[in-house]
Image (cartoon, rainbow, N blue to C red; front, side, top):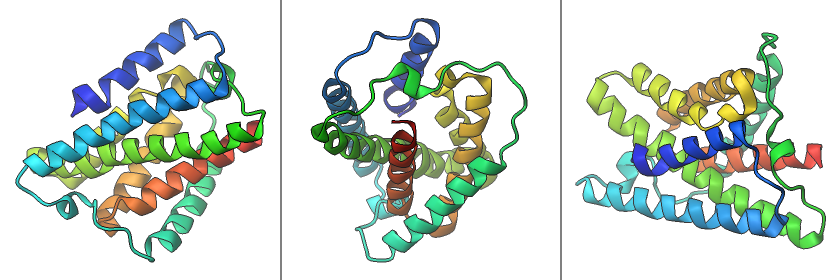
Length: 204
């Protein structure tokens, strides 16, 4: 799963760090992320189904009404945590909004919701639902599983620099602990998508 859900993203992040890509139309950037994320989701769900365990075992239970209020709580916690993470004065690379195109037309904003929905779903299903569940069994430690999954999650955000890596790692630990607490991935998917949409709207 690391080879499919982590390594390609890590290589893309390193490439962006060394040689930022030229700007492309927003719709094209969104469409690419939707298809890549969709493929990652399908592969991960397939591996879950072949594991002998149910999807519910990995936290991929049917969506229910309680997921929305849980997502709102996670979103508020994410915003508060982001404000509390100290600035260590580390060298930084430009953030994602300097690398990627910005929404301009109405269709761009529709694509923004779509791409962040797919991306958040892929990242949460891979790094939280699948990896934490599997690593807990392999490492025999829920805490170590959360830390390893958070490191892998932060690894493909290195284009944001060392400070950005630390920020994303903290988020990964928080989301991992919440996942273990509630045993459901959908609140994290929704909160993750809304957080990214909020950030992009702030930077637009």
